[in-house]
Amino acid sequence: MNYKYLSLVVFVLLFTVQLFSADPIVKPGIDVLRERGFDILKGKRIGLITNATGITSDLQSTVDVLFNTPGVKLVALYGPEHGVRGDGDAGKEINGFSDTRTGLPVYSLYGKTRRPTKEMLQGIDVLVYDIQDIGVRSYTYISTMGLAMEAAAENGIKFVVLDRPDPLTGERVEGAMLDSKFKSFIGEYPIPYVYGMTAGELAQMINGEQWLSINGSSRETGKCDLTVVAMKGWIRSMWWDETGLTWVPTSPHIPHSFTTIFAVLTGLLGELGTANQGVGYTLPFELVGAPWIDGYALARYLNNLNMPGVQFRPISYIPFYKDTTGLRYRGVQIHIIDRAAMNMTHVQIAILEALLRLFPDNNIFDRAKPERINSFDKAVGTDDIRLELQNKTSVEEILKRIDQSKMQFMVKREKYLLYK
Image (cartoon, rainbow, N blue to C red; front, side):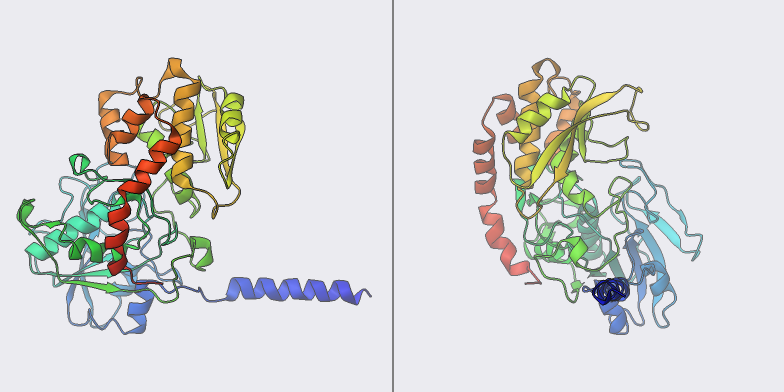
């Protein structure tokens, strides 16, 4: 018998068992609150803003946990974009209904109103927010959180955030700052495109900087009665796969934790609608394609930029759902080789610049409808980047200006950070 081989097999088996049986390194806010016996919710009537990502580390729904906890009275649910169960399409309005499992009323915060009304909050003592975010400003959940904080402040209701990890780490702060002229539901607050904070930390910043608009007036600002239930075990350098937690899709096109990275790289193309980013195919946000793109030329151009941590491979594919004509798309697949070395914003801007440079007859901005250009600028948070690209400003110069724009934010951000 080859004892050396047998020892290796035993080691691998023991490691595998340990890997799949070990407790998660990180305990999200809902786990911490459960350990504390739900102390801050006992004897209160609770409204819960959540979706399918609101789960404990052992995959129990926060809805079910609070509903079945003695002494905690869960009385209403509130759903963001994509709905409480996470099955609504992007941008699709959600209507209110009754939850089939608990019988509780479900109020939509992505329908006729995007903030809880006085009627929706009738009889609520505490409004709890438990949603996994992706760390990107244009993702609407943080806007829902902020608007709900405003409603809580106006109605004298306590607001609790059950904190969760930022899947892009708490160290990555990248992209353009929001210009107030482009404030919208996909950009409510003056933060960078990738803001490097958890939802709880951002809530503290929104509150501390008095970014809440009270009674619908931009001139009347204030704070809500905020409590953040912090995680245990999370450190800022952690990517999602280092937390030990299970990823639940935050929306239909963010199926994996690593998709959050790709969403930064190509998500802006979806706002324009003139080139495809893999939505409609099996690789959402991992592709750049269109019938008019030469994938080999695009891959060669981008690879020759020698951007750290990323490579591009020519690809052809036929999208089979959403807006597609059945045409074959050509383009590139993005392969992340070293996420720690990669500058996501560099890749994002370089892709846009490459499309403009290589395919001028199919200008991604000139071919876009005016409303899509407006949507693009709102998602970016400014029209500066689009105008600079159209004026053939170098990628390096654009990146330099982006870095300069967020210096004040970096200083302000420090006092709201909860984790090392």
